[in-house]
Amino acid sequence: MLAACPSGLIVSTCGTSEFDAVVDVRARSTDAAPLACSAEADGCTGAALGAVVRADVAAGLTFVVVDGRNDAAVGHYQMSIVY
Image (tube, rainbow, N blue to C red):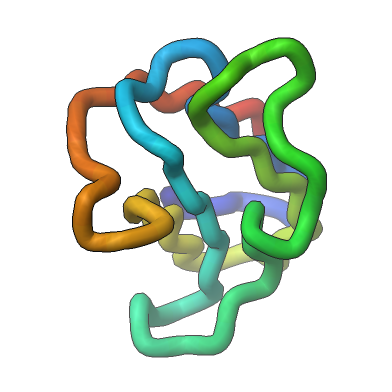
């Protein structure tokens, strides 16, 4: 995602994921330390699977990484991004 201005960001796979997901947000590079990670926050309210994360992002390139909590956590998902 390319953010034109600093803003809050919400990324969610709640209710759409077939696996126990982890979502993190990184600035400028996929190798950068996460700005926010769903593993460090409460999960989806009322949804058995998926993840949600909130982050403040600066203007510029922002990456969203979706992964499984373990090697067996694989499947399809839909992601919503509110910027």
